[in-house]
Length: 271
Ligand code: KMH
Ligand code: ZN
Image 1 (spheres, rainbow, N blue to C red):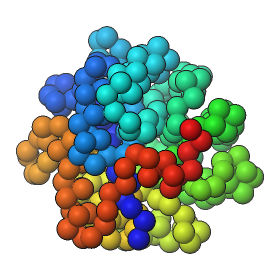
Image 2 (image 1 turned 60 degrees about the vertical axis):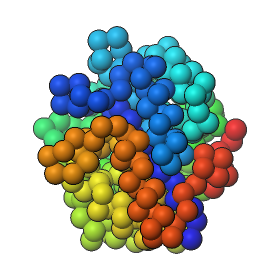
Image 3 (image 1 turned 120 degrees about the vertical axis):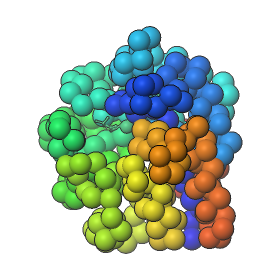
Image 4 (image 1 turned 90 degrees about the horizontal axis):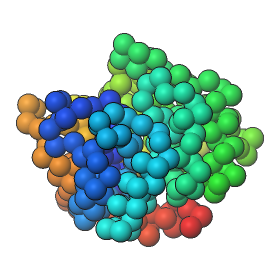
């Protein structure tokens, strides 16, 4: 079985320090969290950034500074968010792609997101995908709902996104794919055989779906963006703590964890 790629979703766009007291917010805090997550077994960090007030932003300068803080500490792959926060205009979401990061997220459809709507119009999805291709940025195909899988495969058929494809099933957002094992199996069975995929279970779904993914040969995303608890009612103290548990479970199950360079090779990243 391929080595396990662990992605750490360090910050997200929806959480505040009131809800998550250990949430890294400043570029330096995020840099340190990335280093710790890498040392615990992560090979990719999924990156949202915050302004000086701690609000989510797609400001390219904040991304630049945060990426510098990550790179001076560790060799982890940086995957920027082009999703931003719910309601962020598409032009703003696109901006940090000018930094030509190794990876970025590409959500391939619209979904109800709790009480809100995470809008991804076909034209916007395509514009993001085209920009990523121009810049040599590897998209992670974010599927919050099952229809998003077919949308992504259509983009691949048109060669707007290139092989090898890397899917992320975000499961457990109210309005999207429920965070259950049969739902995960449906997603996996919707892919052409051999396609790489990862699961990001939200909240309680995080750990159980991660364990299933490890056994099935998929990959795993964990971190505060998706889940702030270590166990029922007990907050995780760091992203690294959540990553370390996944690496431990993988070890027990006989699945080796990929280093960033090994993940670069598996994903055929451009640089
Ligand atoms: N914050 C969510 C609305 C992504 O990073 O690309 C969207 C999100 C997806 O987090
Ligand atoms: Zn995100």
